[in-house]
Image 1 (cartoon, rainbow, N blue to C red):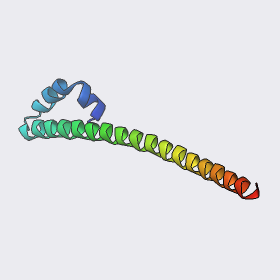
Image 2 (cartoon, rainbow, N blue to C red):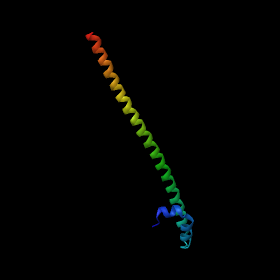
Image 3 (cartoon, one colour):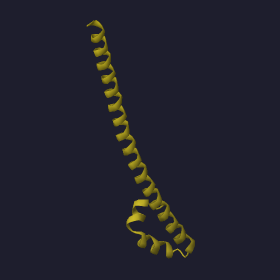
Image 4 (tube, rainbow, N blue to C red):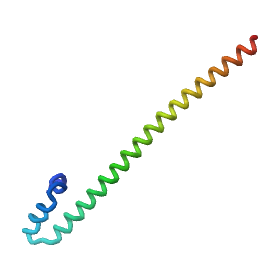
Length: 85
């Protein structure tokens, strides 16, 4: 088992070590693993960016709901005072 962090940091060294085993299919698998790892890291970054956007939108929705509630309260208050006057 090869540690992915080691494979990321030393891919040429790992390739050389695998080449010594006289199994060329291992080198292909290493390259494939690096490709999958790179894609996973891209997807993770995209996911994190989307989460950040969702969190920001959630904050905005909450603020708008509070503002709407406060506005409704103010309108109700003014209507009641207008009826009493």
